Length: 114
Image 1: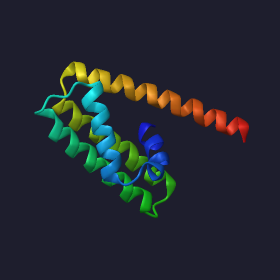
Image 2: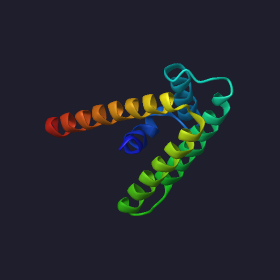
Image 3: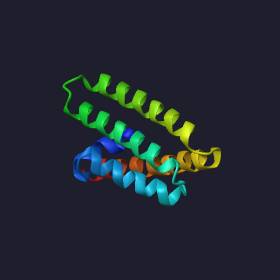
Image 4: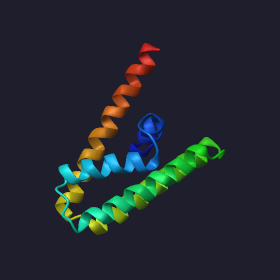
């Protein structure tokens, strides 16, 4: 769901490099990334931002795109889990759930308004 939210707003937030840079900076601050973690997290974020752009431009059926978004989200989490400490990863997952919840609430409000 987080990836769906990111995909929906991806076009509003710029290209893959810009989005991944913003996300990396957010993670640097909120997860207190070390100097050793920062390059790996930056690379992971850019890799998956590029994959999201590829999916956005792809003409696959919506169901297949959703499957790939979910698969990419899981793969990204697995890669991050190998870079982040257990505490950092739990914080990351917690923040991710908060974002998911806000996205669902905003989507519900838009549907009711519209």
